Length: 401
Figure (cartoon, rainbow, N blue to C red):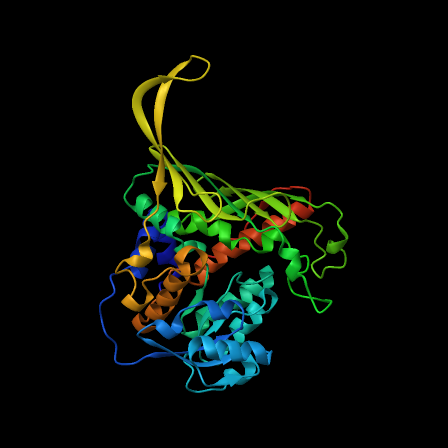
């Protein structure tokens, strides 16, 4: 793995995003003698990926606590072997790697158990639920000698790939501010099953920050250093008795990056909102706005030199505003041919599948390695602490040191 000091040097010299992207998005075109044998754990989200389509991968086994979900996984991946729990699957010597699509509060323990069992690990987001868990996962990942990757979809969305390419080419100039939002109203329908609370009951919005933080971090390589966050809760009885003691439906955080840039993040579970996972990058030469909701057309604004008048008659320098259609990167040779189709979360699932398998075969750190996973996750944990303190500005730990 890349050393910590080298990672920090690359990021501080402004090369991090380019190197990380090139590591993942090299043109596909080689053959391998052996296939990675993967175990899939979790029959909901775990059933939405493409491991069975990857030419260098075999789904060796699946697992879920529920028999109906195990059967669904076997049918999805054409797999004949299932286990009633992760613990049982980890004893299978034929399984090289696991995809943990399990409940968020279990991620830290499941990651550590899997790494200790000698498996490469891909885990759903977020990395963990507390700073103590983050420390434990980091130690396990660095000492294991195995590939660890977090399956953050935002990093591999078509719009984010485009923004990363523009950034590497210098088209933005300096990105002096950015914003991101994750709106998912109506999730309370998943808070209870058979009148029993699930792990989602009352989950603090900022404990699920990675769909937002990745919009900036995966593009520029910046780290979030300070945060002030405010929460909103309406006293709704559904929040009562949640295991997180969380009083908020929605949270808005104002981050300060290590390059002295502002970054606003909103995670909203309730309200008159359009579902969205979107980012905005505002630069001195160009800005890019993803569409609200899952649509193809965004907005590009380019600095121009011609003069214009605003609606009050004042003369100013006119910027050119135009609609922008994002390329479908999943159609290109960035992926092996069987994976060149649209997939979940704006085409990201095939990229996550491919990046994890490639990292194992090439014995390298994946794009969203343990350091990136910490950088995406930890700021949200601290932001929620700030919201509980009425917006007090708090420092965010640096895990790259």
